[in-house]
Image (cartoon, rainbow, N blue to C red; front, side):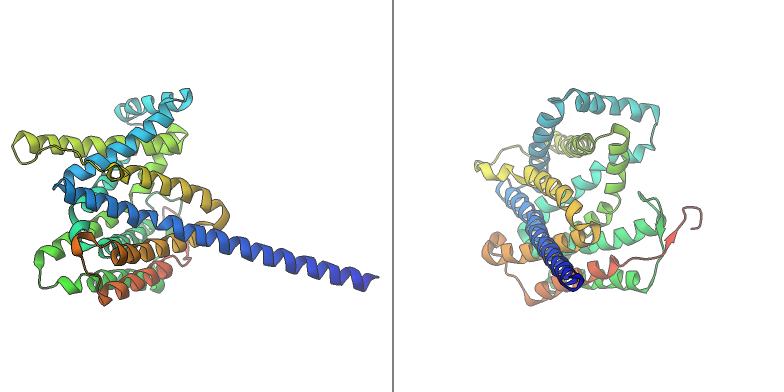
Length: 333
């Protein structure tokens, strides 16, 4: 009798493990698909920049569309509305160091670089340069303890991840070495990636202060849109820019696509954890980038073998850099 019970117990354990593995596989696949929203957003914003003939204006439009969605959500709820309206007072009273309130500027740089460079570089080169910058930024921010409770010690895997990230950027840009302006364009998303590592720290602090990440995201859009629009108005005032809107409705989806990506990642992280989520979403970004460049090339852009190899190297770099390291107390730098 006990033998039969033992067999039944083992069968149940095997079924449970199989079910758990299948569940993880399904959510990993969904995360890869969600990761593809990033390059899709880049493609939309890049095409918008080409149509309006101004990447800066494209960034303003993208931020505005996302801001409208967030304001509808936040202003319709009394508690969230009150939290949002209290943030300027916190800034004035220096409840937090003022740079945290301007983390939205980091996102503005990324969206601006999408509007300016994707049309020329293609989505794969843009996303690979962006991810490479984010890998390096993440390593540096972890080492300095920016936005995290503990600092992360530098070790060989993390240093190797940073070097591979740089190598990935060089690879995807290599077909354009004969065109210096193209290399300059590739530097934009790389710099955006460097800033992106710090942005979550600012958003997290604002979210804690407001007791709502929805309020933090809305504030992020307000700051980014304000900075971009102010700069665009200055350009218009000196005759360096003109304002006109696209006629295609889908070109306004850049902001909402970014919001959808954030929402899906927030849901999926509960099922997968941060490490697997980051790896799967990075894979989705790179796979999606290559697929978009193959089937929906920007302005006749050709995808090169070096671009595909660079994307693979960036994925490996991200995986290596995410390896656990020794935690250091904040006073042991």
